[in-house]
Image (cartoon, rainbow, N blue to C red):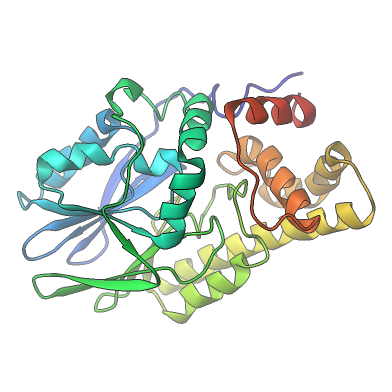
Length: 319
């Protein structure tokens, strides 16, 4: 039986939670949907990932306004994927002055932002509710190379590219005084890792760099907020297991000269028992296998996903 393309059959509303993690940090999560983070400082607010559309962002803004009337000064993009960034314009009316991204994220928007936007809108109809409110691509106004530090009054906020993994430009946001980390999709928990644009060989070392910060609380890209050091360690280990198992299966498939469909079957034997029941697994797996097979074949820079490539791949691997 054919599987519905990507997340087109996922139309059921998810239960949203807005959880305070520390004096200044909040997690906005929704049962495996993309998470956002909020930092409320002395004189303003930072948003970490924007939701997919300005219309969808209104719920997050309402929750922020229930706890503070301070202006939203900064929007941070953890990476370039449309589902994370296209809601940015909603925050301009709330005082946003800068959209911050790494150099790698900016370069990926230049190279493939338009294709990614069209691709993701077709993959996630529920998450792109109100897509007509999207004014176009979200462009950073402040681009950094490795790390920058902001202060919201006395609160220090570090924004850093510690390495590649989920994408070339992955960015984390770190509150050193409170040991709270916003990881974007570098860490997932109880959800599949989307690896269609990944740097799989580099991802484990980047996870080690995150662990070296010794975070006590962590907001992953998907899944519940991790609120103890033990949960944080478990989430990082879960992500490392997912991406290393995937990449190892890809390398084995290439070494055995399997075609892509056979590589999918080979990968399922390794992945399904451990991850088959987690959020968005069936959506992610064909994209993940395609990327693992490419990277194992020597294609270091991910090929661009277009709406047509999405559907061709899905027909070959999931139907």
